[in-house]
Image (cartoon, rainbow, N blue to C red; front, side, top):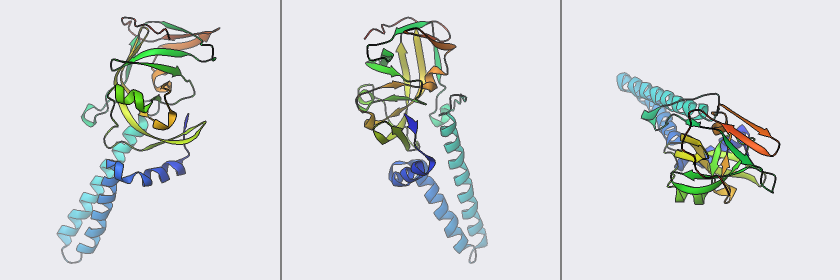
Length: 224
């Protein structure tokens, strides 16, 4: 599961204009700046004020976009509660997961109290939940979030950003975790690198995946 090429992302964002508050705000700001250019000849003060407001609005939109895109990179840990972007925290004690018969590592986890199975995918940038899991766990798409386009084995799919209040498995507890709601992924839920990179360490020994986060937590059953 990878992010689609930048041109696909741009085309997808344009198609999703009605669903994106940030993009709509940018369109309104540009319109305000254009209108200010026409008004400035008749009313210089009003025209300049409109163009200044347009510039400030576009700058604010750019900052919000940078903040959201930065959170997709595991190297960054941004916490902006005022913007609805909580700190992403992963803590707990060592959790061992045996390889399943299909050759993958699966976890039985709790998402905001709802039980769901997750595939551990080191090739996935972000943790992802199915539409069914999102509905059961009462996860909602982030207001003003950027439309995301993912490239999967079954083709490109559209997705929306969300935040998981608490995701628990084994001795691990993740809070404020960014995730995507991707209906095109079917029933599969995926734990991605934005969670794994916040562990103290993780490794595979033989047929066992060993997850070692910070600060021990009360264990929950990971048996599937």
